[in-house]
Image (cartoon, rainbow, N blue to C red; front, side, top):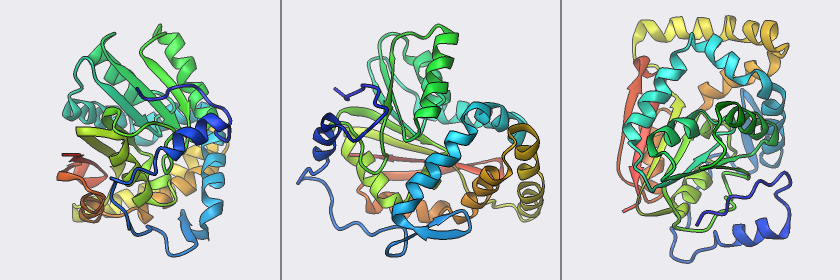
Length: 282
């Protein structure tokens, strides 16, 4: 079973015991790093790879309480349709264990549990304890007191055993990691043979007019909304910039194949503003 205890400090011995399970000799090796050497992108800045995780945790600690409201304002509610489409394509079944990474506020977990009911399990793993707290509070407000576990952990070194999840989901989280290849390798490790990886992420707009309108909106409107609503322009400026540094659709699909996934495909949403990628561990 996936280890699903809530950990505020992932440095304890139990976490390390689980993380050591990642050294599975049967898993693919030799994956290349997404960042260049010891550098990684943080928005349009290049920072030391060792710094990025702390910077990202700081961003999401700052925006945790306003995160869901800001998503509604920034996307005019469209993110809800994207997430519905994401879970529709996943089509979770009763009895599944779904590992939802970077899912702190629970948007994907609640949708999955609605499909699987009490005969299923969702493990939400997020780097930022403040985001997990928001998710757990939302679960209590919704009366969801079982079937979802909340786990603090790093997507690049998951505190879960190998081959335990029927599905791995990550929505709007992959662009915030330091090394995408490490996350994909960990996703592959965590899945049972026959398990499915699915990613929902902002992507490259494919419509010529829409791309210019989207750029104007992103760089001129979104940071201002962040300043007015969340009193935090800088964090939302980072979020806008991080989208532009994320690999386009075909490149991410190639990275998934390099990690070992098969039957890799993707679907564009809203002209490529977002995209869903799907792959299988066969």
